[in-house]
Length: 516
Image 1 (cartoon, rainbow, N blue to C red):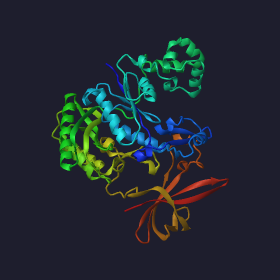
Image 2: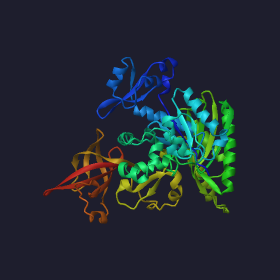
Image 3: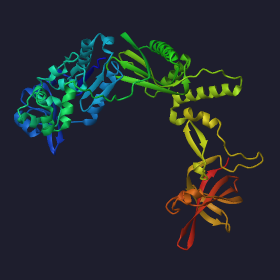
Image 4: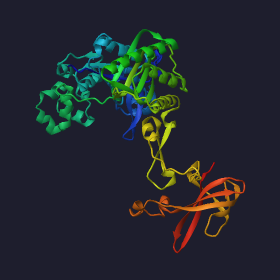
């Protein structure tokens, strides 16, 4: 199968798309080797004899009234990422080629858009309308396409003719280091064909093996795989519109139809979706993606529709259709094998399914980080006794977790509200060898009337034998906990920890929780 890739080079930002601006010479300058040099320019500046890498002082000497703009790498990277999002409509395999290029693996995709020539024309026309200077090439090897975009414009190389297409190109189209390019020119090798005509051992001996590997890629003799910016989804369905759509009813109906198609495709392979993504492609190039996750593999259309409805209703920034969407895509980026099994008549099984569905809806509306379950941990440290995890992924573990049990007549051993970080208290008076009789916490004074304790809690012995220093690690210090009640009826959970300082022990008191 032929593997076609197109390499797109994007130029200046679309804010500079006015015709009057392009009639004037302008350049983009950035600091390179402690000097301002040209990193981008328009065609008018190129006609004046300016080149990439020319010092800014020389450029001003050649053209005193030239417009100069400072380079903004962050904005350029964001613009390139936005263009890559728009290119997802052609293929899910889109790779970045910084600083100004993109690779699109269009193997088996070109016929969906009327052929390679039509696809190339669509890319060029749209980006040109947005104010970008674009060079596009389609070839069987990504390095060949990249080399063509540096010199030629809008080329399609037939399969197997990569070497003939790049032979007349100058050597700088290889994309090698400037020192290597200058060395090739001094040796009289001015085109890629000249370099390819020499013996490989001669080129490798003088310029290194890396240049030979690059030359073979450009000539199409070997292929270097591209790295897509995001992995392709496992299953994907989409719908193109001849006319842009903007109404909520049409969008909802389209998502419902796509969900039905997606479920049908997954059922044939016995799969269910764990993560779903809906992408909306606007006619002006903006792309918005909405994702939902599930705790169990989803195989029902109604569940998908309900989750996306919850997600869309919870968006702080609703999807703006602008002038309309010309493409809506639904993909399953994470799937699992669904095993058909006979469900028993136990009501708890149905309750578990209902709880999982409720959690999925809450996560779609509130976010995964806000819906958690707690799992018991094998440790004596109170603040580490429970570990919070995403409810979608740990619901089964939490339902069968083994928590410490207590008798019905026994008072609670742990407070209902435990602080994430214990808060220090100021002791005014204390009982002999016991808790404080009078203390200040959060600017309020409390007088103790009832006390129960102490309860000694220390780090596990295997951690202490590992050489952990109690002075440096506060969790390694032994704690004496007390359950107390003040004169107002409020109940607290206090503890003291002692630090050995030479021959004395210094005690400090902390508030760790509040009982109901």
